[in-house]
Image (cartoon, rainbow, N blue to C red; front, side):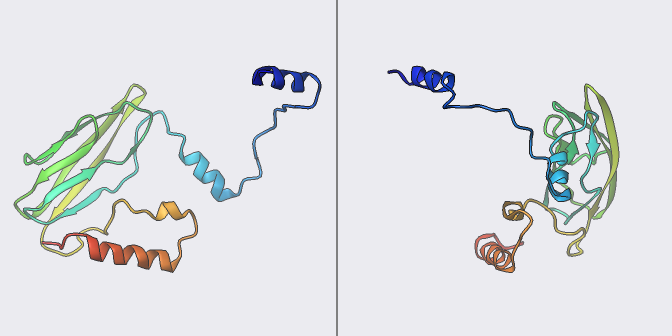
Length: 165
């Protein structure tokens, strides 16, 4: 017999049953927060840092963090001339050569609306002008990061990243 006929025969005789069950509603508050976070809002919302630190003459690469339904278009007002904003990705790139404080307005827009935020770039020789931020793999560990995992990652970073120039 063909597999489809076997499945149909088992189903019709009652030996194979299918049931629609409600979703698991016994979620913890933390689990519900995680699920809610993946549902983007319709109107753009900036949720990233509003202060960026960079050393003079060092390449700047910063992605604007915006929550919203895609596609999004990005634009800016008063962005320093030596920097560029990619209108499709929201990535700011370029090099600032003179120390100082640079302010500009970032705008994200989609078919549902737009949002704007003022962002400040601090360009100087001070170490850690802003808190170190960026991608990390701790989310892979869920809500239970252990000391051994953090130390293992720190050792890998020390051994594999290029020295700061």
